Image (cartoon, rainbow, N blue to C red; front, side, top):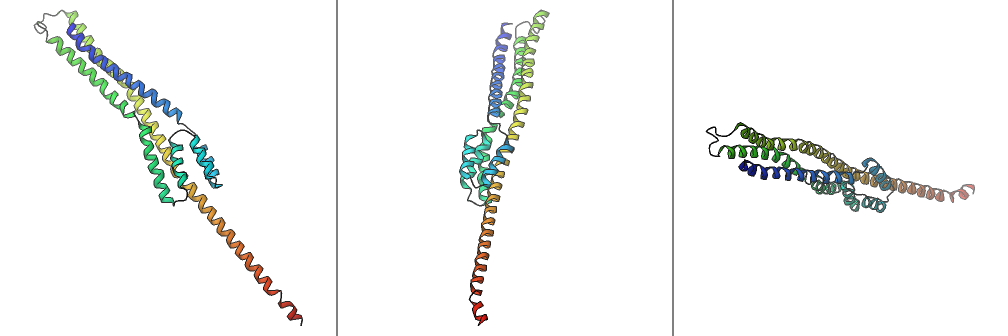
Length: 238
């Protein structure tokens, strides 16, 4: 039995190590997602009102005050508001790609832990059984039934432990991966929305300036025509 215990011990502690590692990753990712969670709709509406008013500095200051990848992507786009739409879109997508690593960091480690724990459990079970049956007299039937039952119980406990810890780890991996993908989509959408808001506001301002210039030119032309017609009146009376 001492052989079985020596085999079971290291494998069990290795499984426990992966379980603690998975727990640390889950806690860190949940805290990160909670910290960077902002209302994207309110943020984009406030940003739109500032950009349409031409207050780019205030919009940049607002983006810098907020945490998270969405605000950082918008912050990377705002200083380049004079570029054309395609160039700003490239800047937004590059900034979003840089945020993907931060959002998905350590999530793959959960998948590795959920895969390793049951495999280590099975490995521990097999090694325990092999080590037990390698003892002298076991194959010849010299071992007492209680000893065999205790050995099987300890060996199977490794597999049970690995599977029991694998299930919640994999469920947390699926949840965090889904939430990360949702955040990435929101970040990419916020970057593109910021580009469209800037370009639309700029085009509206240019259209308004052209309309005002045309109106001023028309008013100047009418004034010129009136000034040209005034001297003609005395000649008509003569």
